[in-house]
Image 1 (cartoon, rainbow, N blue to C red):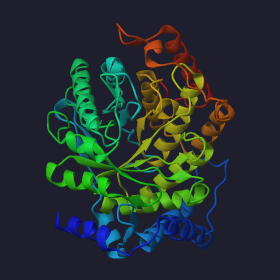
Image 2 (image 1 turned 120 degrees about the vertical axis):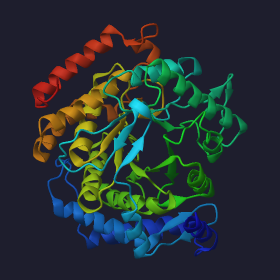
Image 3 (image 1 turned 180 degrees about the horizontal axis):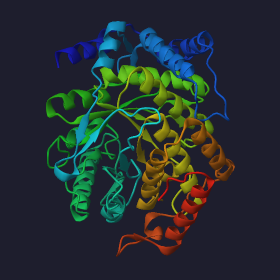
Image 4 (image 1 turned 135 degrees about the vertical axis):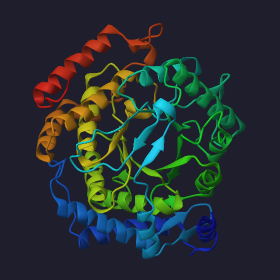
Length: 458
């Protein structure tokens, strides 16, 4: 705790800089210089790379960026700077084993290697997607009843008794507590009462997060998010989330959603920012593990070529240089009852499994609407396990992903995206099983992807 006091003090007394100068000079300018220095680039037809030198260069550039900039505190307008020794100590402190959940439902997370023979753990749900309260528990059950699922993500409640939940308002307390009670009830009904939950999606601000720091809502065997802001920024609210976790004991998941096409520029620069974000999150977020979730500046989804490449190279960079627990968020553009959702999920799962990540999601329809279901989480896990089972190589993974991309890239140009259908239209609400047409579509795509080369599919 005393070490974190020092970090908080830096947020109050570090060098004073305007946010505009931070964005343009400290981040964008430094990243451009590092991209030139390390001669970084990417090939849109080489989504899964087989270039260890490139992965190492991305890691070195990210470390240099973290040393040069530190983190900007938006609440004070000051910079939290860190020495090379502190960043190295942060690397040494990254857990190599993390047990989440309890009893028969406990799972041990671990750093995965490139082409690891150990399958990824499956963290299932549509993280943060708004869903009506009357459907909440049924939707959670649709995911956690799948035997392949190891851990759960929760949805968010955006209305309580018909009233909109506003960020930082008093109803955020009610929403986060109710969300967690519904999730716990769903786990019990599914026969998995000790399963860990990534809590709490309704906690947009620290108010909701603090409201569930109680074993009734969020036992210490759960994890919660300590987000970073774009790019390389924190604020007092997110620092408060980290402070609260120290004495309460819950596990921290850092979440820096770096933007491809934002301040870091294209994919190569974004990868450098992502590496720096994780290095700094070890210190400012007190991260027990990291969520790898770059997003596209226009498309949002993690299934674009550039975002897939960033996920691949960042996971490989850490697997080679600083093994840590990375959980890769999968956020397809498409929603339930679309073939494209299954293609996007497969591409994401292949890239992240082969590169060294665990799997989380899928956040169908960009995680923005409740057009999601447990079927795509089953599919995500099956694809990840198949990659491991057939001992796929990096070159084979790249070829398969390049075959999947043309099957869904058209939806990025499609007006209105590809939202699909809401949960209640793709699942039977009495049996909580997928409707026949959704199950048939899933089985057809599964056969198709197997014939494309993913022969490890059962």
